[in-house]
Image (cartoon, rainbow, N blue to C red; front, top):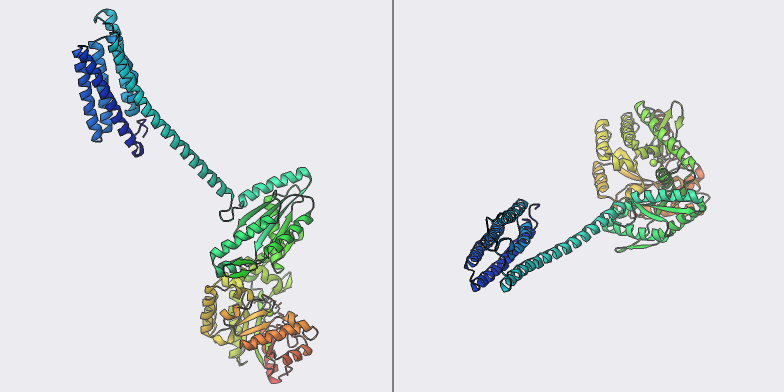
Length: 632
Ligand code: C2E
Ligand code: MG
Ligand code: MG
């Protein structure tokens, strides 16, 4: 490839062979014409030399035809060199017009042959001319003057025509080469631009990616410092995007992301940046805002805009989002710190029930640090067995019988005292510790329930709260199988309390796990029913035995008509779906009576007992069995 100008590269080899053929043809024609005119002027010797040159050149042509391009090129140029040298020595020497053919010969050689041959020919030509000059100067050879007139004109014309035609062909090659070089160059530049674009933009939405967002944010921060203005970062996370993606497919998910990205762009000025952070997360960088309220206004606007209905295939859905807002206050704030703050605030918004925004304040950071500390204390607590299980009795409201117990975890920390589950369960869920903790809870609850069975307390069903995280990160099926096998508890005495949010995920994997567990004889209930989602379609897809009405509806049942209406509706749902129903948080007899009137069949609450230790529970059951009270 580097050896020849018209190289042996398959793409240009054809051109090289063609050009060689053309050069040879032009040269043979020129040689024959020249030989003819030499005959005409009676110069037989030159005519014979020229014809021999034509014959040699014809041989080169044959080689080229057979595909030996390299050999043909060398033969062609060397034959010409030989013929020219012979003519010079045998006729007019340094006065011969054919000297003009040397530059042309060098052009052919340069184009067609290897560099070493080019330089060899150059050396031979120079040697030839030098020897000629010396021979003529020394009188060893008598220089004849070149014949003036027509023979001279014909020789020069032939050389000029041959050289010009060859150069015209070469020029065409160069023009083509330049044109294709230009278009290749443009193509390379285009793809270079695309690569650069993709390195800084998201391929789906074409929005700036995190990398470019960082750049823009740093720039905005610098600008704001100079202009004494503020920069805000909004961290936007679509709520329940995974559910949409899983249930409607990835194409629908992509469509949703595209629409959301377009809507986001309509909420900000051109100078602001909307970027895709990844997955279902977007960022908005608000440049040079005069006051933090603007960021809050934009967040409100984004929530409204994104919540507009959207046609996704056959469905009309409403996608909501949770937003965390961080406003840069001091010189220290950079993209990373702002992002971390906005992320923290976004989680707050999610925790507050989603479809909301929260503005970061320093207390959030303190809280996050506290949670980290709590998580590390929980790790120690698991090793030191600081957790215990308490049990809250559950009653049949008609017969007054104890039908089972809900196992509720308790943590007695040596310094912090009794830490309520409402405080440590969310931390355990966020840190993933719930999986390990959950394993212990299941084993311990099953062991205790089997003990009570063996001690003659009767068939009491123990309910265990299972966090969605345990399904996502742990192997619940294997855990339950193991616990039942190890403790010998009959499966029908075990109930797993699931959350609505888990069932809303509607994944095939979850369905299989629940079916497998059900086939063992385990039952399921939905905890805190009524607080989660208005869409109850999951009740069609997952079989459960029991709904647990959330205590928030029970607490004010006797005084609040709305709560009564909700409880009535839940009772109807349970009736028509043939599900058992238990009310949580019954604290007084008025509420109990009301529930009995409405037709609720089971209950638990402080009216009877809070969650108590296993031994207290055993005493409680034995006492209750001896003198049943106060359900009826
Ligand atoms: P939950 O599963 O809805 O549990 C019922 C909660 O209501 C318990 O709070 C219980 O003590 C409380 N409660 C029962 N009767 C009454 C009443 O009459 N009045 C009032 N005000 N409260 C009543 P607890 O034990 O603090 O648990 C809170 C939440 O923590 C539980 O709500 C559950 O979601 C979670 N949790 C507790 N133990 C576990 C566990 O072992 N595993 C998991 N994953 N979560 C647990
Ligand atoms: Mg529960
Ligand atoms: Mg509950």
